[in-house]
Image (cartoon, rainbow, N blue to C red; front, top):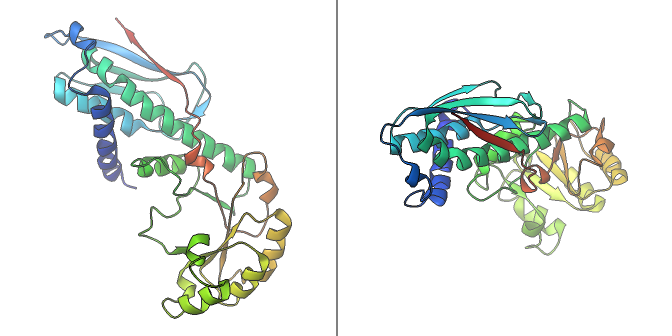
Length: 286
């Protein structure tokens, strides 16, 4: 994703978040309003060890408020997205009016803490797996309206993006297949509509996989397969024509079990669904 695209997405995300937080006005900060717009400095500190992510969203929060209230905003970063940050470390300096800093603070930190949390968790999975041949993928299990920024955070943490939505890839899953009398019936009817070599298909058992593998689809998703079943499944798939993806019940505790398997992808909903936000503090210095 280009930076120009990131800024557009970040602006959309931030505008909604500011509207939610600010409403018509900040009742508390309005009591401190100063027409001179005297500049003050504020610093952001990390209270956790983490992977930093979300700078553009953070900056957009300040820029949006600055456009509304006037004055200037200058942000000096000591770290960049993707960098390792340590507990107690100074992350950035903000120079602006007290009003702009106070109003933008929470929205800016909310994005920074959420996205850093996702990038940090993703990096933990990648490190635990420790296998450069297997890609850790995200899923569509995201916060409504914030998918793009969450997927950006996954990439920042060393993971890869799966499909953006229902519009950019064909993936037949359990409930799609349930519309047919049997897995065999599904295969026979779907192959009349589309070349199976262009699609991804989920299987839930070795019997269905054995049938499907003969059609060499683009990708086969092994859903909730045990380690023993995955090893058997690999032998049934033509690895030159079909990639293998696994998913279901994968955690930091067990991902190491899949290291060195002849699979291509591990898709993990936990990356974006269960967010452990990174703790940041912002302090104004007079």
